[in-house]
Length: 89
Image (cartoon, rainbow, N blue to C red):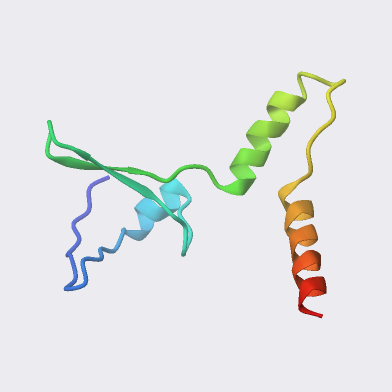
């Protein structure tokens, strides 16, 4: 896929929808940009989503059934939210 985009006066660019969909990019997601000086290109790394990380983690942990699994990200988020709410009271 090849698309053109313009750089705004603030230095931002728009990533075309087909590319965002192919990479699974979401609004607000952090991506890493790296300059390849040898080829004069910018490389973009979208990293993993939490869901992708959890899937990979679960696949690895399923190979070790006697090992206890960690908390899910939902559990961690819920616990953090409850803690934050209780601190505000």
